[in-house]
Image 1 (spheres, rainbow, N blue to C red):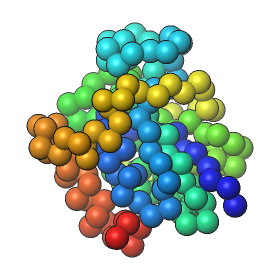
Image 2: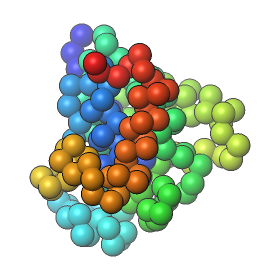
Image 3: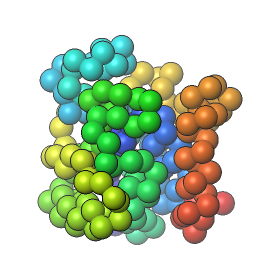
Length: 176
């Protein structure tokens, strides 16, 4: 089977990138922007919250090693899908919870997982489920951010605990 791509927004892309880089079957993770109306947006423009884009990761994965459903189970464990346009102290539409599906099959799986997660979380799920839109790769300095800057404040206090949670809760899915 050929690789597939999952495009997910769950707050700051540094968090999701660090998480999915750890997962068996994930071939590549790239931070970027999608869901907005400005062509080739910059990080500064997206941070202003006026472009409509979300910070996302494009996760290239081998479905023979990990399923789209499994990627979503991790997604819904690592971020809070009940907070509209925010994750922790990151506030704005660019930090929204979103799944940009690439196929009717991904849409169906995502809708099913969202419905299941509604039984897990105490508050309503606000994750957007939208068809894939034009995706823009984020600037190079955002790629592999946590790996390059593990001691930077945000990485140490926000990203690292999420990576630790992943390693504890999904030990069987983490690369050796």
